[in-house]
Image (cartoon, rainbow, N blue to C red; front, side, top):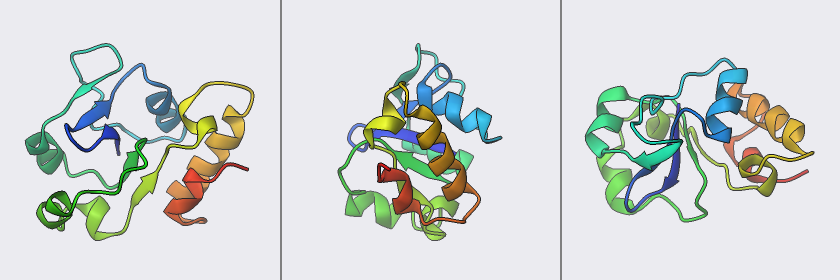
Length: 122
């Protein structure tokens, strides 16, 4: 699992971020858990390719750039259509609706709902 805050530059959410906490509750491992910054920071394309995440969550509404789509076509997350929008307010901000966000994340990760469901607020 990889959580990206942006495509250019590649900016990942690591240990201590809200989404990392939600992923761990769902039983997932964040490939950016070893960032050497507080909770987010730059993350190289080489590390992404080497760590081969099965899922990519994106907190930016920008679509994946064509250049990355082409270079990452064999990355499990891209190849299997497991790139999900994670910019809904209840997903990126802790608050009273966080349990709804966690429920949607769990549904997407267990494949009972499509990736786009994660970006939709209830």
